[in-house]
Image (cartoon, rainbow, N blue to C red; front, side, top):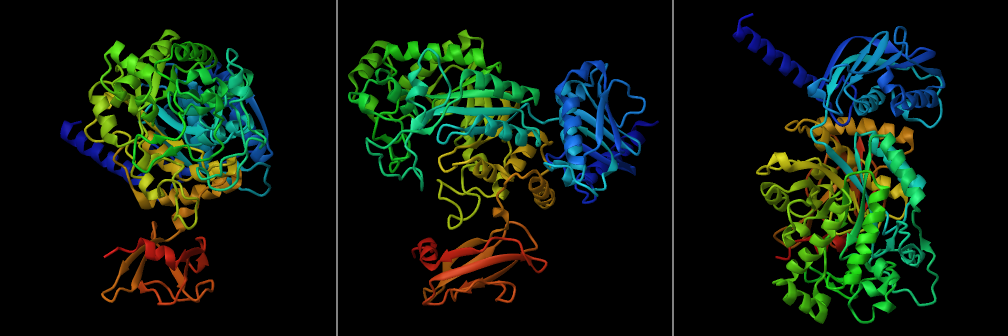
Length: 638
């Protein structure tokens, strides 16, 4: 065939496949696969189901996962066999690896009489199965078998592989403790969307959650605080006699169990011990780790204010929550902790924090001044770099690599450290150009503790992060050296997250957008198509009894003033096709109230604006209660 004709055919084929990616008739798959082609016919699940797997996959978790999910959701009889001749679902490890698929890619073929998943390794089979479940009706996610479900699937050819190797979510269990079972539950939800790293934030000012046998006080004292209810960070300081019974920790056996559970699902677990700052729980347990007088009176934080952020970063510490870089006992402590942690976690990375270290106690400390003189350290950045470099060598001694928040790059640690870029992406870009490995996790796109709706609806936490903004996240920013971008992740800090239902609510659906940014090919952003698939997955999460945030249906409020100084409110929505109805008369609007069509002037004596969104004549959003006093605060001053 002439080259020109072949080239034209390839273009036509590419365009048809590219069009297929946004075809509304295709199943709603998140993250979006590399290629989805609809073929002829449908597959119907039989009453007797055989899952066959070749020898290489026979002992993997995947076959059992497929059997268990089908059995639970359908109630049908499912058996595992190594005879593929009449099998319903065939799991095949390629005899000769397909380079395009790598370690985690797969090919999923659904034909009228059989489903086949092929991959180079078992991880690819597992991810192929996650895609397969998304082709099934949402009842596949149910906790119990359903009757009357037509288990029919469209015939498809899917080829898929990840854009990036590090696809993570961080779960903070220090601010509020989550049980071992709840952590497993969070992992189960992660793998639906092809995440492969759980960043486990195990220590902070509010609790030390991992048993260290060399230092028992870390969990005897450091894992417990006073239970408070309300707005974290503004709690009244606990009285000395209030019981410190709130919290918990994981034994080393618990850790091993969770790590094994995750690895069976192709998730690696990275532990984080946040040092030298965020260490009040450790200091309350062992005051000698501080070089500040009075540390023996410190207690684990229960949510009272301990930092003054009014002057920006670094904060002014009201109590010294830092391990002392000039105290040799700290390095003995860190070496023992790292030794025990390294033995518990097979993953090749240990996170040692490095963020938000206050310096006001260091600045007036004689031991720090002597350290600076002895080691020729010019400033507090250099002091922190000295600490981080010493503990990094301990990590490397145990065969691991140290990960740290991007302050360690600013401080100047060697480039054998891995930088987790949480502030502006310029830092991650610069680090990659200096050949640091970088994990992109910029707060303005992927901090899952941020509000996903208006502050009148959700607990106030630092900033707002709507789903549409998270969807803009590109883990490979322009200007970065792509060779050093390992991947990215979303971070769920738990100051205002008191239970697993709220953790789910904050993670999803923003976790969909992050998963797609990390797995799917770049350059495919299509917000309407993403929302189409997201809404389909709301039904799947409902079936799975997983909570999610509906903030995407809430209106956005804009405030201005007219020439006479009257307040004027502009309403908008993140997604198209929603109608908005409002009131100012203290009643609750529905579709018989005024519809918003243009900016509205707030009546002079009004005290409350209420707004609700509808779609196709039915309410879809939550009733929004916007005080006029709040609108006045948001109005321009001039």
